[in-house]
Image (cartoon, rainbow, N blue to C red; front, side):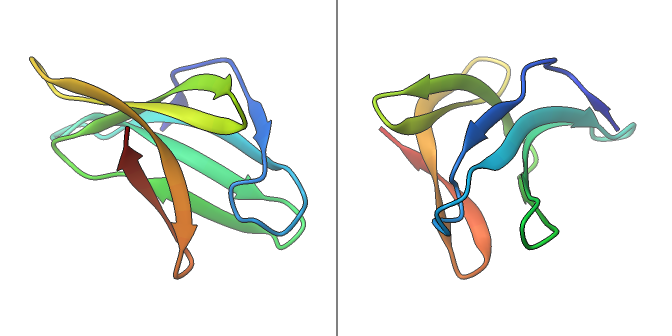
Length: 93
């Protein structure tokens, strides 16, 4: 696994009042993909937004939300992430 984006964003994904470290990472060999990785350093927990065949790339922070692009070969859409039930999920615009 390696980071495909050198940018690390600080954003409170988990809703605990402390900013989490957010980036995206490329991993896999037979089914390679890009996933969003969130590290809640206060609670020492990692969360991943992953779901083959979709790829997820962080695009930045806009208007108080973490912008994520979900894409495949010929399809893409933008949205954000929502933390619920100890997981992060993609929410399309």
